[in-house]
Length: 325
Image 1 (cartoon, one colour):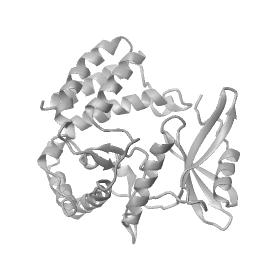
Image 2 (tube, rainbow, N blue to C red):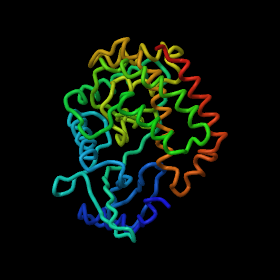
Image 3 (cartoon, rainbow, N blue to C red):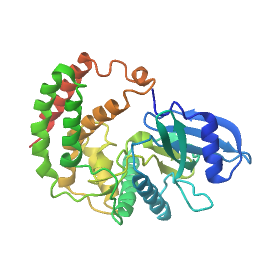
Image 4 (cartoon, rainbow, N blue to C red):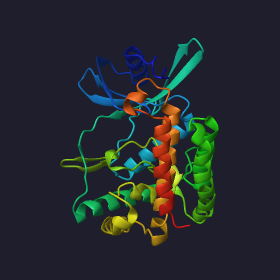
């Protein structure tokens, strides 16, 4: 059973109307989202909005407020981001508490203006320069503030705990020892590699699916749900079409565009393959957390089976071999 099974359309309308003071016209459009629940709603005057209900127990309220603060600062700096709408009390984070047989369940939510666009696939040199400039501008804002409640992207704070949690959960089955033996020594070796790395506020999940091209307006950066305190290059390498050594042109162009706002050196790009390993393990931990949701196995068939873990161990071993330690 999913924690969202009791989030009915009536509760969605009630939450948004009480928080905003609007009258909605009763239309509700669900959007694909594996972590949260996202719906399109429309006010009676015809304005369209997107409302996102955050997964309960995933983020504390201060962590969500930090996400919104980052977005509002970015918007104030005229960055093209999808920022949350504020109500009459200047609040951007709403909450509705639902009674369940096991106790009250709070849902936090946020409302955004609906903004369409097409997926942006960088092809020419200017496209890669645009992406570099966009992230250079974002990170200039990111460097001006701090996070205290968001995740910290380093091997010691995320990778090691996730490896241990997956191994201890029993989800890896009789391959659990192989999983630990492969990853724990590498994770410990990666810790000092990040010790001198400057950390800052970053998007955290800046893949191409989170960037839209809006005709006449330009690029739009979306979905700061995974914003974190981490190395700047985390937001850059996710845009690459392949391994770093196969993407020298893209790396150079991203660095050039980014460098118009702040420099990024070779030592930052040296973290790409360690960060790729961290993301692979992070995805496994995320799937484990989500695996009890209704419909999860339809999206990820075979997840958690022995055959699945055999393939994952092969992929992880291949990535470990790519690391230069």
